[in-house]
Amino acid sequence: MKEVKNSDSPKTAYQKRQENISEYIESIQNKLKKGVQGEINWAHVGSLGHVEELLKEIDQFLR
Image (cartoon, rainbow, N blue to C red):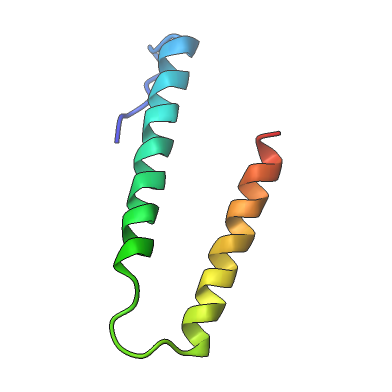
């Protein structure tokens, strides 16, 4: 992750934030592909439901 510094220009800080977000998205995708070890239960479903809600909130925020 790239650290945003007060000395960064807005453009540089924005680019760093975009790169950090891309890294988070890639990490999430890798974890989703890996899946759950063992039998899937309702706790796993609930956890993904929470992730889905957070992603929806992010999507709506960025509009």
